[in-house]
Structures are given as C-alpha cells and as structure tokens.
Image (cartoon, rainbow, N blue to C red; front, top):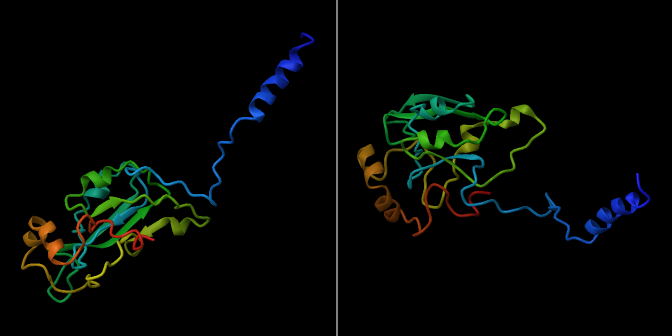
Length: 188
C-alpha cells in the first residue's frame, strides 16, 4: 500500500461529485414510456360499445406463465355482449404471474386484447393484482352504449370485423383515434 493510494481513492470520489445527477425523481416526475412499451392489458370495444372479446381462450393458451383465465359465455338476443355467438364472460389476468411478454396479444384473433403504456401496477395487496374483466375493459367513449344491447352496426359479426374502420367513421370516432385506445383522458 502506497502513500498516494488514499488520494487516488478520493480522486474517484471527487470526480463523480460534480457530474450531473441521473437519479429519476419517481413518483414525483413520471417518465413517459416508449410507444411500444408492454404495460397493463386492455380489453377493447367496438365503436358501438360491444366487447371485441369472443371468449376463445387463445390468449390463455398462449400465456407461458399461465396468468390468464378466460371463461366464455354464450350471447343471446336478449343479452348480447359481443357481435359473435360467444363472449368473454369471466376474464382475469394475474399480474403476480404475468411476465409482460405480449404473446397473449399476438394470439388474439380479434385484437380484443392489447397492452397500454400504463406501468403502475404495484400494490401492497395480492388480491388487487388479479385484474378482472371490469378492470381491463376499455372505457366507453362518446357514442358507445354499455352492453348488453343488440348489434347496432350490422346484422352479423362479419359487419363488425370486415367493415370495422368504415363502421368506426360512421359511429363518429374521430380520424386518427383508434377505438382500441381512445382519447388520453379516457385511459386515466
């Protein structure tokens, strides 16, 4: 050990003392995530308010962490939740198990399930981290009606899936605003 070793050690300390601080002041200052960030899941709606989820359970099968539970139900003419013959009656995502991989999003044939940029899902209660269908459903935008209700945009499910963008324009959804995400105010 040399005489100048302590001075070398203090040299490192002094050189870092005057650098710019890189600490983020979270939660006071929240960082905006990247556009393709995999955050909280969202179950989307059609322009008239019907749910896009048809209860096919493909998202649950694709999930490597077994974090998704879906139980399909059958639509009736009196109670219609989606344009198809089935809908997601019970839908749960367990965020204690979810690894945020996005395989469920890729497996969804109707683009019912997407991921938002919301990243604050931490909680001090384990039960609150199991999100139900009510927690995951996209908010109703202006012009949408709370299901159950009859199909408003056509006579069969082909009208919803084949002519989707045209129906959105007819329903009054502004250009450039998708039905999946809605306006920034509605996501909060």
